[in-house]
Image (cartoon, rainbow, N blue to C red):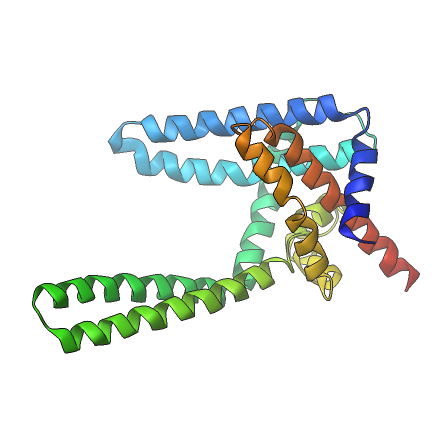
Length: 246
């Protein structure tokens, strides 16, 4: 199957369910907006604490929204607020999967952090050298900036390619509740081996819709988010069927 076929399947599954999907997405976005608003306007003494709470809460909410979408995809009854309970009822699993995926990507993540550190240090030292008229030192630090940028590019590409190995982990965990977090992550890698490019191009095919969503001041996201998620679920179902046939 190609990207257009996954999108067609998603539209078919969303037929008659757009209202539920859009309202669910609206509630989710409003909730995330409220959390962000509070975080940005909280008193300084509690800022770091609330920022940590925000991070902790966002993972199960995202998990819950995908859970609700999968139930809707499978023609199950689901309410506009069900994603909240679905997410927090699986708080441990959602974070378990997230941490397992991060551990699998730890090397490129560390390299990205090192790259930013090199670039930041080199830029600071380059400007200092220019102010002190130390041209030789300025050249060295400018060269370091280039090295840091190259390392950042390579490590970012590596991180993205590894990320696609684990992108189906949430769906697999939801579809197979008996699997542990580690097993869901490993299952995702198994399914995504030799299929990462297909999912990448599927998501890339939504770029036009994303531009329209941006032009509409984000209102289009109410339709785009479920459309993308249903397409990814369709992609997952295809991989399962394809694996059974072989």
